[in-house]
Length: 410
Image (tube, rainbow, N blue to C red; front, side, top):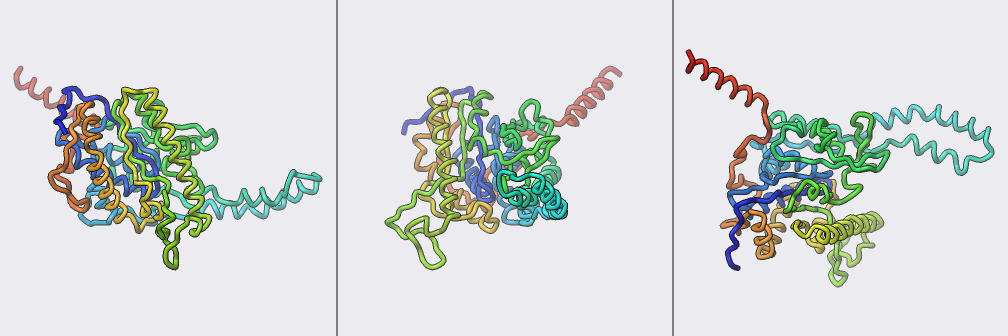
């Protein structure tokens, strides 16, 4: 392939990190490590002008926007004591929503009594009155993710980073869905940039039914993937011309000629042999991925000057499909799997991607040697510039200048 000379001016770039539970977090960490190896020394994954994160991608994006490398994130996931980030405890993810459950349970006798009185007064209630009663005693989610917020807030504080959208040097947007209206909310954007990053991530990662909705102010929020799977339009509206999307969740293209469906006893040919849970999961993945496909077609037609690159698992990736998205024990193998498969993807599509990156002033290069995810990368952990704006730095500089001026004039 002829050498492509990148232009001197670099266009605005965006990185979009989609959702996918725990396996989505670790897949994205592996994918980012792989992508970083293909980027030249003048540009790293921490140099994207803006990051859009939703659900699992919001968690990863909050660290990345603070110039924390995938290697540091991975070290924390595998609970390495040398990791700059504290290990992420399992029970911070799976903390039962017992408080709300017992609170609602205590109201059951009174609710049943009131319902009985209403039933006696009315001949019909348009259905079984006791069904709605028991609906109301169920909690709004099986688990609570307030410990996720605490972990992120404390981690950023220990590392000397910022939990304030307004202090980041790189723009970060965290997407959530307002429960009572269904509207999209973009934390980090004007009007919503006062919310702490950790609180926004908590809202964006609140998977409906699995986690209790997150209250911010007077509003309840749930997972950011409810409205759209990628939210590419945010990056386009902010002027990005090169958009790289990482999506961990794809449907399975099962080959029924192979016995590749894992069962308790041997292997099966058909997904239906796994039961209704996997049928529902396949249908949800089909729905989510079809939104991506339709969106990409639309954006490419409406914005021909914008290049969009989508990185995701292959459709025949059985390993990604059959791992539950909340499988905490799979975090290390899935991170390595994400790294290995994305490395292979970038190698396969190198001649297609290199000119695209070059059009936007970024050099894509084949790595001289492969650097495993389990060791520090060839680039230093510390960013070339602080990850956030510090008012203290400005104050110290002004004090130094005043002192120097006093010496010169004395």
